[in-house]
Length: 425
Image (cartoon, rainbow, N blue to C red):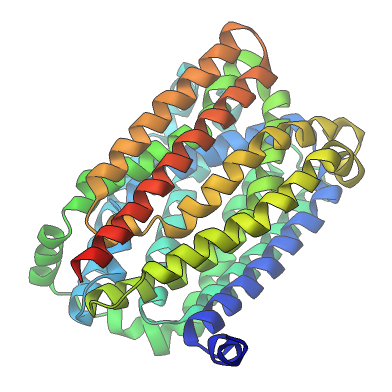
């Protein structure tokens, strides 16, 4: 076994994961280190308003590509992959224009959601949707071409711009909308740098448009808008329910504390899962296309993940309130108390988020949608209990417990897909 370690470390998959993980770590460290500054510039209400904007914008971003961007990695031929890129751009452009047309009606639209304070920044929504959607498409094109350095470059540059803009707007006194302006300007700058540096090597292949190929891809991967889109949409909305549902009942201040808890807890997990997802999606697709074995890897992945994360989270439980108080300031101690309830869910989410592409690889998008519907109903019920009892902490606790249980069941089911595949070889 020791003799195999150097070979494993030199493997392309490990190097690609390391490349992405290094960039993610650097980007997340930049993002996290600036928050002690930001929490002393901005009020919790400012973070609550920012969370509301990104929740609404994120929902629109999910709709924008009809999930066809996730099909870019799957075709054996580059012609079909290129058609998937073009196909993904069509609904992006249409939705951007549609949201832009609603700008004159921003105040009455937001009034229905009791979020009128967001109206001055509504005009930024179509810009946010366009930028984030274009990056989603390019990201999967880079994954297909194994251009993981380009992905890393965007992650680092976007994080640097985000930290700079957020701090800069705060120092200049743009406290109410500074975080929102930064959420638009930072991906814009990151995207321009990425396109400028990769246009000749990776993007020039996308200039040729083939309408017939687009129609063929739309038919071949029809399950993505049919099942994967509702799956992702429900997953995202269910994840944003505390912001969307609790804001009218408890105000932006408590939601701001919750948003910080989510940021501090999910950011470190996401930097690992994103790297694993992007590399393993491409690698597992190739192995399945070649009818190679994959069960041993997923068995080891499960064992090692649990063995590392559980002891680490057990230690965090005792120091989280103190840690957030020390890091962000006295009034943010409650964010650490919220994170405590999130720990079991974070473990299950780590496993599911790292391997969620298995739904697409094995054509089980319909079953993935079923899981999301179940978890959304469970989360809604959990939040409803807290609202009924007028207890914000109870709402968060129920929400997190339901999420952990159902995500755990989902991961067991995903591993059963791997077993069925192995049995078919």
